[in-house]
Structure formats: structure tokens, C-alpha cells
Image (cartoon, rainbow, N blue to C red; front, top):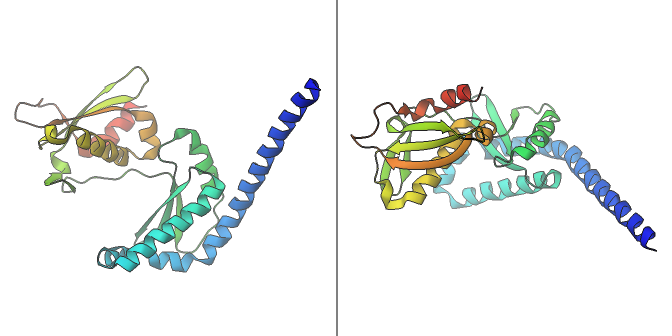
Length: 232
């Protein structure tokens, strides 16, 4: 009886895994035709003009949010960590599939995007790509307006092989130390891109930039190129 019970449990686990795999595969095969059938609707909804109009149109904003939720639900049928981001440019529309920096799932995203057919007007990208911060880029944090050209940083390699960062900004960081740390964690992840950030980012500290700050600090606007070279 004990042997029979031990035999049944592994068989049950294999059956459940197979069922989940089949369900995921079915959802994956169904996603692209579903997306293709609504490509024009999505292209219009996630255009630059719609995004701009939504700032003053609460109904349109709600429609955008509901559609992102709908697409996200379809993606989670394929993989529970998949989530969509949408963008638009002169070259057309783009859907990015992210796993929020979880490197364990990068292969799954890559395989899913590789399976994408050609859909007119759309490109599909695995993981958030690096965001280029120009010196004139401004971020609002509370009452402070922070210009990227004024941010500085240092990095030091830790025993895990990633970098610990200290970011310097001309603001009263002590007023909200944790808020600034979280803000610049997110901004640094954006600057590096999801794939590089997963392996390159260690701890994060933010300090006030003053006249007494180290004069050999590096400009934040060059952080992607600098870290990419440092990880080679």
C-alpha cells in the first residue's frame, strides 16, 4: 500500500505539470491570432495622440487601463509573471513584455517574443529596453524638479559581481531618504534596461550633491555605457 501511494503521487505531479504545460501552450498559440484581430484597435488606443488626450479625458484613461489589464490577463495565461508595456513612435506601435527584472524568466520571455508572427504596424520586444536620459530630462519628486544633467554617481563592484551605486542629486535627500532611494533605483533600472539591471545592480544609496561632493563623480547620463563596459 505504501509503495502504491508513493507511485501515485509522482504520477499525479507529472499529470498536473503536463496539464499546465498544455494549457500554457494553448494560450500561447491563441494569443497572437487574438492580438492580430485587434491590432488596429490597439494601435489607435496606444498611439501618442491617445496617450496625450487621456491626460484630460478620464473615460479614455480608464479605457487604456482596462485594455492593459485585459492584455495582461491574456499574457498571464501564458506565464504568470508576464506583463505588457505599450509604446508608440513614428515607426509604429510596440508591445514590450516584462517580467519585472526576474532573470529566472528571461528565457521564457525571449522564447515567447521569438514566436511572434509579423503583425502590421507592430513590433514586439522582450524586456524593457534602456531609456536614454538626456541632460535636459526632468523628473518631478515632490516639490523638487530634478534635471538629469545635474545627477552624478559612483559605483563599486561587490562580491556578487554587480555594482553598488551612490547617486548624488542637488536636492534635500534627507527629507525623504527612502523615497529618493526608491526613485533612483527605478530610474537606474530604466537607464540600464531590464536585462542589464538584473545582473548589474546591487545596493542603492542617494546623497545630496553639494559643493563639497567628490569632483570625480560620473554623470548619470553616461551610466548605461559605463556599466555595460564594467560588466564585460
